[in-house]
Length: 303
Image 1 (tube, helix red, strand yellow):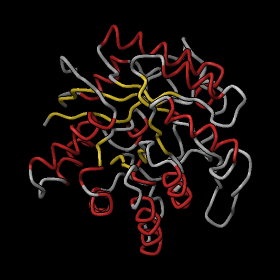
Image 2: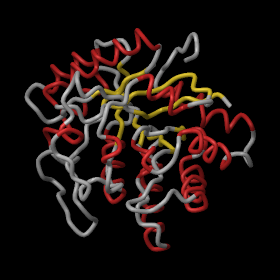
Image 3: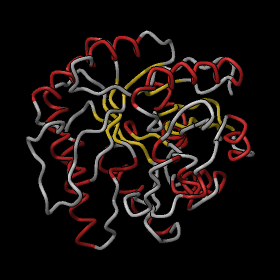
């Protein structure tokens, strides 16, 4: 099966500064716990080696938390990588929405030919029991919303990454800006796999899915300090497709991060296997075409 990887990362620790990998290692704050195995270079040849026999025809690189003073340098470096290796084929860059130079940065990012969108994480709370609503940098902050509105002006998409309890707030943003294409990262993070937790996650996802401009990535099913569970994760995939519809779902690897729990071929085989009960055109759409369409990728020749 041909596939498009709608979300992965690359980093060269000699070319850029990645604080979370190089100086601020904090497994307590990281959603998977210990991530020391990925605190090293992950370059284009490493990605190819990880993908192995998988027929990857295109990839989308999502910003990798490089030092925010180097956000344009990260994008420039990725274009160098593309020129040598033929991928990534689309770039989701970084720009803050609530800073005085937000428009300047968005304009600069939009001028790179591979840039299709922005991932800019809003301020979020550590748990659903706490609220940061209305604080600076949140999805209710007027400065943040003004910056977000510029995505439409520069024809950029938004990669949305927030804990599940913030999905209703994200739905409000999507409703305010229906012309901005949005894609939810990592299935909305169903971290609480209890029946009560899944019921809450499902409700939050349904609220977000009511906005037609929102898509979702079938990605990153890993949990803190627990092995990758095929049966549990299949349930998450089935429910995500049921909520959003196959037309708005796309496969993504989140490598090398997902490699902390599962190999690339096993991940692809597992997710593809979860879709075999569906018609072939729906499987192909979720594994390939939906991402090509969402990120407006013209891939010739394939990776």
